Length: 159
Image (cartoon, rainbow, N blue to C red; front, side):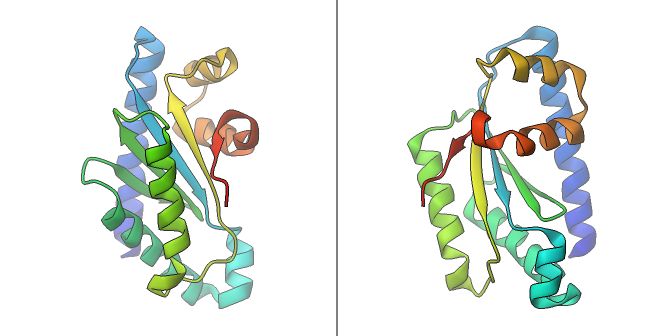
């Protein structure tokens, strides 16, 4: 399952960077939502559950998210962060409700939660700084930028 996570991450980054290139080259209105679920710090997870159990929890969460989203949505795990590309769907209450429900239901499916912070980003963005970063950064750097600024750039999921 860990190999599958790595393959999913690589596929996700390839597609995400392709979307970034299309949007920055043409500044087109290709709508999609990008969901970020911060499942807690890797060290925090390891300390709470042990390295093996923490890794199993992260793999199980990836599988849970893949099953919960549409087959056209792309789910990947990068470290303890989960990213989901939701094509042709702006960040609406419907997407927020779905993500909120998934995050709340993880405990019912036997998945342990240390701390989860979920955000939804909508593209194309009306924020010029985001558009500039989209043109300047690679996929991993852009995701790190979004994560670092998620409290001001995204729709937060109220608990």
